Length: 244
Image 1 (cartoon, rainbow, N blue to C red):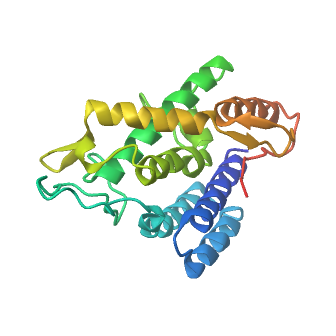
Image 2: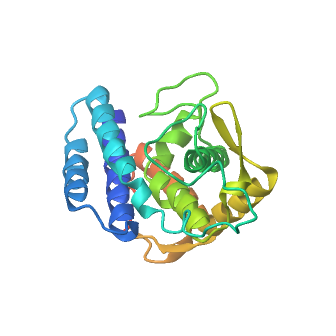
């Protein structure tokens, strides 16, 4: 059951990455989209957790190679002549963390932390132990089950909040500070991103099973309840949420 559940999560994540690129990239990369589609199919036939991790890693590499193409309003406004040129820019070339070394990666890391926190709360509210996962292996202090449920929502909630925050200029390069290789948000920058994240969590989307429009925050709870039904044997497959 663990591998079956993990396959579904990774497949859903890759499908949602595909949707994000198709919808938001300034020039959707046909070859990358086709590769992601093939990798989603490959995830469903993975024979072990190790091979599934490999498929997920390949998909993430392809997705983030083209992530910069979804940033539309990054540095298109020149600063006034009297203003110093910003030392930090919304350039994105690859995913990096611990510490994030550029503003986009700083936003992504914060977004994933917020989403993991919200899903940990959801798991606790539904009576799950958030530290006992299926795809993510249990480790001290690691909310493995919250991270499991989070996988398909990373592109749809976290990445989308980051893109919207940058593209609508809710944050600017001036909202970041650098200390050594690490880049972090200023207090004002964090407040702006928290607003962007909450706006995304409050946005409505149609649940394919219920046929009703619910917020993403409510969607997290629904998916947790569906997981409970799956584990109890009430439904044969976990219905991962995939948008179109």
